[in-house]
Length: 121
Image (tube, rainbow, N blue to C red; front, top):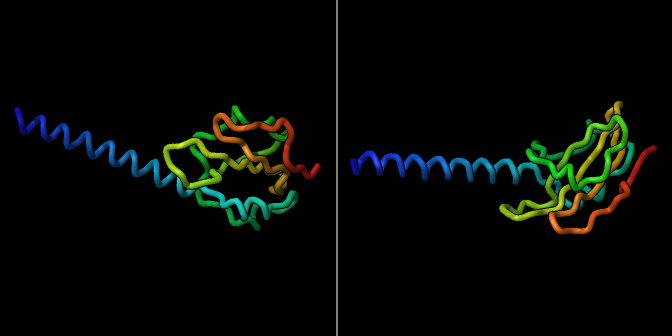
């Protein structure tokens, strides 16, 4: 009985550790550095951008302004901090793959702008 309980507890600890590791990996590989974000200009083609290899898994779309019509938007973290709310960067691309808008989506409790930071149209 004690062996089974120990095995179950060990499996639970391993599962929690694996989940925390996956969370840390996905969050830290979806960080767009502030200087890289600042250098982005509307009209730049997606193929020319050096973006993180992952996007945010659960984007804060509810805190973001309405996207440009027909745009494909991607979200990236502004910081690699874990287990805290951070600002996000939203990059929206038009149907030709050019940057149409870029926005800072504030962390929970932060200021929100109702206007897009930049547009190409």
